[in-house]
Image (cartoon, rainbow, N blue to C red; front, top):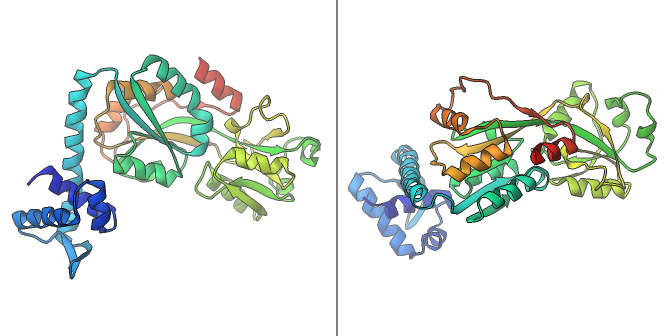
Length: 334
């Protein structure tokens, strides 16, 4: 048994049983992949994959049991390599971060800048995607850290730590009727206008839908997008009223728009930072995490990593309240 055989099994499953693709990923030939899988099956005395002729079509029941073990073995092998690197190269290496568009655009820039000043020898890779894609990049090992508001806490294989709470804002062009409303805007008043906001599954969209549903309203969402800048662009064109994360609006940068506080309308959102359960973190990874969320010290992160999927941290982790875009910039600069 060797690691190349285990990688062949893992990548075959991840690729949907496409051996041509697996051969490309592992830089070998398709017959070589087939041979490695068959040799491992012969050694273990079981069939790992279901076959239709020469094609692999799925996992057998023994294969279903075997796959999590293979994943753990390869993860621990990667941890061994990282542990060695930790002591031979304390301040150099690679850090891969997966984040949603809003986090990459508004929450991470100052943290990345400050991190680069302290660790100039570390190469940063920033991947953007949906919350589900962020989780998948963590699970596959493509990313070391994931940052998103949705989805991350739904995976037992991930440790999802609270970072900061934030609210939504309503954005409109200057002179819009909602700016003349006496007191706070209501959901009923908001529902009279076309809505432009995030796609389902992004940046607190679930809380927006739930708020309208609770009072029996069905807003007219005429456009949805992944990115707040896209939403604001179409609000500027007069297509509707925007609902964006408060951190995505800056009065200096967004001079052609006006913002109304919507914290009384929609539930407060919680952004989380996630790590693969069982992963080995190098020293500079802890530094990045604490720079992004000062409450997430190395002690707290290690405590979370040591817990099982159903266990909770023994101590309450404080969470920052970032209710305005300017608050985020001040906190990052502090």
